[in-house]
Every structure is written in structure tokens, then in C-alpha cells.
Amino acid sequence: MRAMSAEGFSGYEDLKLVDIPKPAVSDGRVLVRIRAAGVTPLEHTILSGGYPRAKAPLVLGGEGAGVVEEGGGTAFPVGSRVMFTGPYGVSENGTYSEWLAVRKENLCLIPDNIEDLSAAGVLIWKRASMKSFSLFSQPAEVWTTAWTVIFSLLQSGAVKPIVAKTFPLAEAADALRYLVEGRPFGRVVLTI
Picture (tube, rainbow, N blue to C red):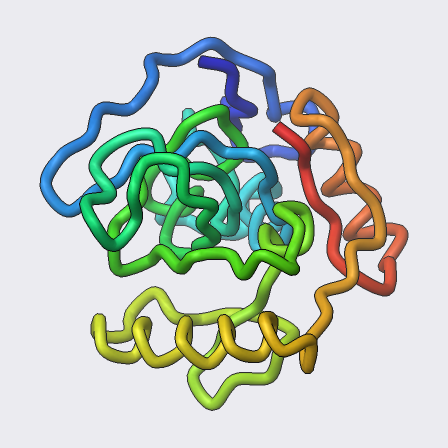
């Protein structure tokens, strides 16, 4: 499968389009065909060598939206549109790829009125504001509560994610540069 991998951590030039094996589904994981990946400042920090725990090579990207292909059971049947965030692209391969094996607790169905591009860049903190996320170390019940609230806000139209610009997967370095240097109003999203 195609993926954008950080082959090192010294800057944009280390982000390379590579061909890696498609992930296998294991216990508690769902195979998702990625349609869109959120681009965040965290990816820039990792790519610039500012996150010492990251190990190269590493497929970046911690936020995404896509379609369930396998392993979702009754909660996330095959063909379901889902959005998610998690430790992907930090301690394991992430969303800058065609497929990802996502933990079930990290998944949320995408409301019918929300496009994949918008869903790929939705934002989650404990005591949340809708501008960023930090849910990685929280227990499963916090994830469930957060996704329930976010789903209802998106479905009702009370929250409308703003996508400033999209880039194709192969231009992930340009997307990161635009995010960091251009400081857009709205999210930057990769299309896969």
C-alpha cells in the first residue's frame, strides 16, 4: 500500500512516498480504508526531530476518516464511514496511508451530513474545545463519551469543521509546510 513515511526526523525532505504491507486485522482492531487524514502540528514536531520517542521509519498522521473494510463487527459493519484519532503516527504507523488497523475504541461513525474531509480533522481534549485533541491516555469510557458528544454536535450542525485546504497524499510535506508556515484558518487535510 502507498504511505508517506518519515524515513528520518530532520525535516520535510525526510517524508517519502513508500510502498509498505497492508496492515492485518487483529483482536480489537478494525481495518479502515483511509479516505482523508488530518494534518496537525504534531506531525511537524515529529518530522523535525522534536519528539524523541518516535522511531523512524514511521508513517505519520493521528487523525483520519475512512471506510470499514474488515473486523468492525456489528458496531462498525463493513462499509461504515468512520472517523478516529489516537496514538497513530506517534508510537505506531498512522493515517498518511491507504489502510490502517484502528482500535475499536478510537472509532466513531461519521454523521451522514458530514463529509470525510471534514471528519478527518475533528479535535478532542478532555474538557474539550473543538480546536485540538489529547485523548490518547484516557480510558475507554472517556473516548466513548467524547465521541457521543462530538457525533451529536456534528449531526445537529452545531459544529461545522472548516477545511482550509486539501492536498493529495504524495504532497504531505507541502501540506505540513502550508499548515506551519501559512497558518490557515481551518484544517489542512490529505486526500488518500
